[in-house]
Image 1 (cartoon, rainbow, N blue to C red):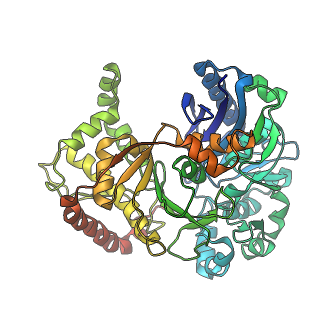
Image 2: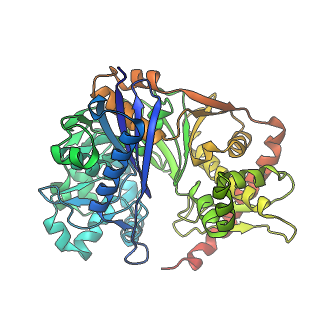
Image 3: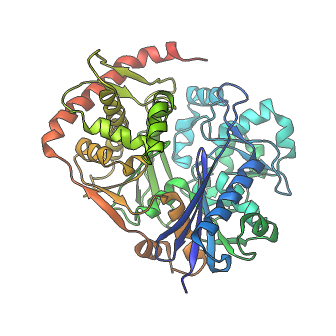
Length: 506
């Protein structure tokens, strides 16, 4: 009889639950849109109980869709976005709405630490850049602006930790997630009092729960969680993992030969090695899910969410027509881009709607528009601009390693054959796409498979559960063309740098 694994993925805006066989076959997927609130400009929050209810609904629906008996699900694990602030009291109850990874309320603390050189002094321990939605800055903000919440709080969690808490009733902090928070010493894999002292938050040590590993059994599904989700009480729940680790595992990232990219809300570009990189040109080095490896990440919120915004704002009629015809509005976009010649237009798009890889004040723009150009040309510029941002990050990583024989791509862009070819042509390296539609959830299921005893280790689980669906070869005749376009993109970044601070809304 077939046995199954459940992976749960709480991203920036959607909660997903997916059921997989122990060989990695995707059986069923269900999702719920997460309602976010913005009580003030720069704030991004979510009601944690609503988040759990919607996640539980997605789990129940996935089980029903898959026609799977709950007793045949051998293990569960969660993944999700990193950072933010999920405060709970000693009984595991939320003390306030969660603060999400796009929040910027703590920007002033980051500015102060940068000005004072704190980031440089502490980086040998944290191995990463600092930014407003990390809990170090948010905890400092909370202490100064909302102390009553901190007084009630007993632990700060990530979204992965919170969903696992709701499943098991046990409070803990998973290692890969915590290693991306600037609250610990990444080299030792432990919390570090000197790190907290450097950020002026030593009192926050009490909010840091015990660390757990990704594939470690961290409790079992409680009766209350079983009633909410349809899972069987007593089902083992693994520690789970950071979403970048989950996508890494689901892409077969098990040794130093590979490099993978994730084109989603964030454009993440990453590889693993046994020797960590501590350098200002690497955005983040964290502990990887596979013991003994570090994950080197270059990323920013400059990826496929920029296309989603454009389609939402300007393609309502096309979306309705596509849905009525059983089509996707994104397939409409793909056809429009495919009908354009990459050499026909020099439009440059800076994909900075939700953040920038070059400046905290960087803003999105189109440069080089002419009246004869069509929506297809503008869409092509969006596709290309997002890949240029990935290339910018890749160039930084290539200071510390060689270009791999191929790059594995996941996220929304990987579902577009047109976009896949643009990635291959701009990067001039073959691009492979792992099989499956929900790689974050698959990565979580891989961790669950080890916790449940289906596979001996994370590498062996990856070998059994990861497959490559397609590969796209670069067109060498477009190398010079895209090098010229990328050079224009880089020059535009330099020209705009002095004026971005004047355009910023403070």
